[in-house]
Amino acid sequence: MDNSHFENEETVKEDLEEIKKVFNTDSILRENFTNSRVQKYYKYSSFAYSRYHSKEGSVHIALNYDGTYSPEGHYRQADEINDLIKENSKVLELGCGKGFNTSRLANKNKTSQFYGIDISDAQLNYARKTIKNTTNLSYFKRDFQNTEFDNDMFDIVFAIESVCYSEDLDGLIKEVNRIIKKGGKFIIYDAFRTPNLENRSNTIKESVSLCEKAMAVNSFFPVLDWIKTSESNGFEVTQNEDISLAVMPNLKKLYTSCKNFIKNKFKARIIYKIAPSDIIKTSISGIFMPHTIMQKTVSYNRIIMTKVAESK
Ligand SMILES: C[S@@+](CC[C@H](N)C(=O)[O-])C[C@H]1O[C@@H](n2cnc3c(N)ncnc32)[C@H](O)[C@@H]1O
Image (tube, rainbow, N blue to C red; front, side, top):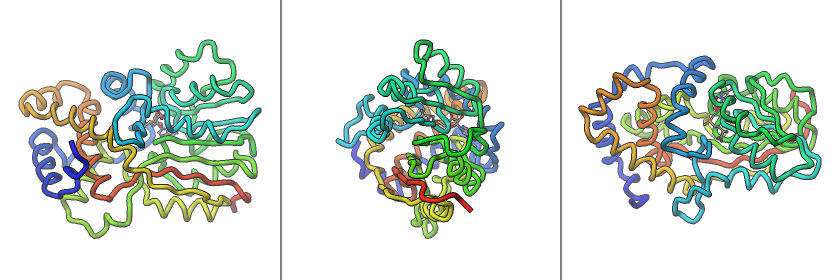
């Protein structure tokens, strides 16, 4: 399937109509996600991610810069971060999920110490099982809004598709500023709303909101809010790169399997009724994600910033 399939608003409309035949979209749009609700989402959807997304434990979208899906692309974010890690560093992942990124980095950087925090027991239990022989990696059940680490502890803090769950952006950035050393780096890979969304049709706005809510995110942050909030809290943003096209190969793969799932409406409605609804609802995000990227209402960015001062 070509990327241009997702550029046409008519195809968003058609997919929205299909989705409405299976799901109660009004109730999905009304949901508000707090930490405890996000924990529940990952408890139930953990199985679906392992079964349909990555058996190796990635809970993020693969980066395939050459335009063709390859599972190797799931390692790409960690490998790019790896290039920034110096000897004897202390590195923290916020929202480490099943430990896919931290375990790879810890194995590649034996002189450095790695930490992963997450609020989900389901994710952390999986992560802990995979690191029995890795001595330079520890996992903690902690909220990234209040990490409980010492001041100026880390050389690198990174977050892959997790800080979109933040309920308080300013508080989060202040907390990262507190625990990171001066000169240390904060690296984020995530989805963001673009300024284009404001002037788009209700269909497009609804597709973006459904995409977010179906993966337990209240609303992706506008990328400019991230930049401004970081810069007013002691960070200098050295890179903000839109790498949306690199996520399209994986998104198209997910789109095809989610469309297959809702093809038989009767069967899909029954499964939606009897299985934990969070697992099934994820297919709504699977269908709308490539649309949001090609409609340029959501972008996937790599942001790298350096701490230059304490936050006020
Ligand atoms: C999409 S997954 C990404 C996991 C991992 N970064 C990866 O790349 O595979 C998002 C993770 O963020 C975690 N998360 C959400 N809100 C959090 C919070 N307030 N504090 C810590 N972790 C959080 C979720 O539990 C989930 O494991």
